[in-house]
Image (cartoon, rainbow, N blue to C red):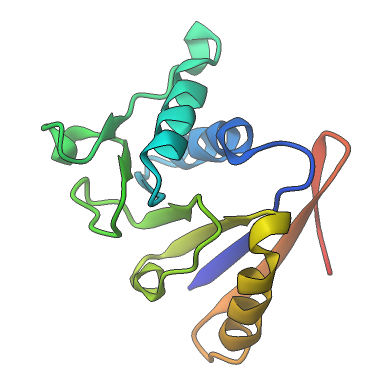
Length: 145
C-alpha cells in the first residue's frame, strides 16, 4: 500500500487535488476525497469544476444520492460508497481507515505538519506501507525528504 504525503506550501489542496484526481481517472480508477470541514469540501468541489471543459472532473458529495456512480466522491468519512480504491485525505488529518485502500494521498500544510510527521514515523515502520514524501518547488512537485 502506498501513502503519498503532500506538503502544501504554495497552493491549497483545492488547487492541487484536481491534477491528481485527473490522473486517477485517466487510470480508470475512482477517488474518495475526505475532509471533516464542509467548507473545505465545497472549495474542493469548486476546484474540480473550475478546470477547462476538456478536463471536466465529474464528482458528487456523499449524502446527496448517486454516490455509487461518482468517479470522485467527496465525503466526511472514509466510506467509499463509490467503490474507490484511492483516497485523498484533504484536511491534514490522518485516518487509519485509509490503510484499507490501494493508495492514499495525504495532504498537509504548516498548520497540520506535526500530525503528518507523527503519521510518517508510524507508517514508515509498517511492513505493508510504502510512504513517499512530496514537496512543492515552484509550480511542480518533487519527491524527497
